[in-house]
Image 1 (tube, one colour):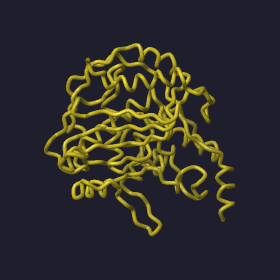
Image 2: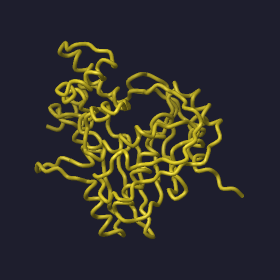
Image 3: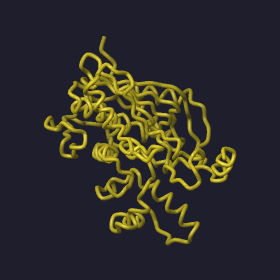
Image 4: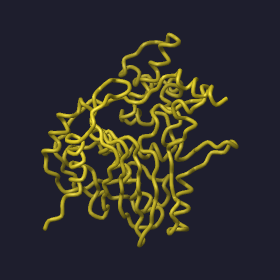
Length: 328
């Protein structure tokens, strides 16, 4: 019997949500969404690179975003300068929130991003997303004033002690999340959706398990699957192992109401063979990877399916003040 295409796991999860998802409303926009809780899919990376084929996925954006995370950067200028706009909405939302407070100049989003690209000082302030993924991976701030490089530690441990089970990197830092943050502290533009990953080495193969607390299944998850599969391959190479599996565990898996039609179109498509991702074998350190060190071979997807991004996140400032008062 022919083995089921691994992309079917993703398509089956989309169908599960459409058939069984509980419908609720998104906090900011009021957009309806269907949601299920607690699911898992997994990909054997020796069987091809899991870049979805039932719609074309923006691989350049995935690679550059991952390199941005790895660098420890949290300012969108790196991405904007490379014509990658997957984080623009959150920076623009933050600018508008502050503009309304102090009467700053009003921009369209296109003009705002143009200013980010052209004005270094403006970008330094308004391109900043707060202490998001890369900052927590590479420069986790401690109570004694140090900054912990979790990723460097994870690589060191995995190289020296492949049988250990505690190699975990977390992006979830309560000090910078919503009501838990001090009123005087910066907060993350959005609390990390892909919150924590765990490295495992078995039989000389490095696997990575990701827990994603919130998953936009149509727009975000295709990026997340490819990004963390690529990270698994990069870590395997620099640690001296073969790539194993990428295991993706979800908390709230949801489809937004303005994506229902697109999801039904995608579910009806038949997956094609996965492509192959080749890494420059000369790279031995995680910080040495550059965009040109990746080559995607044999990617022949169905056409793109467009959908509007839902800019989620946000909270009531009064709740943060009240929460912190109770703990003073």
